[in-house]
Image (cartoon, rainbow, N blue to C red; front, side):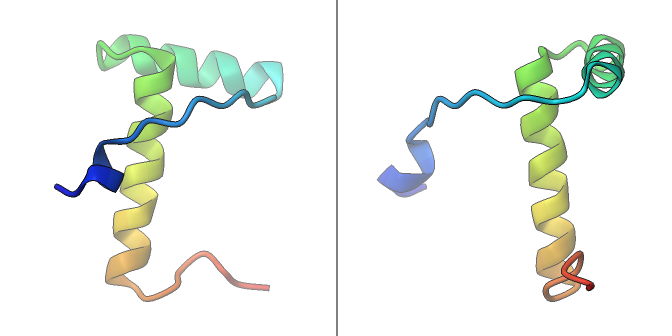
Length: 59
């Protein structure tokens, strides 16, 4: 891994309460923090887009 892969960025996001509860529930089921669950979802989506070109950019 390069140095850029190891950097962590701290950010704050605002998401609807029902979505936050859903993420929190999934995180608990998978024994992760909410942050780790969100990172997992983002990594999964990035991998899907990598395999399918630029999937998810439909207009």
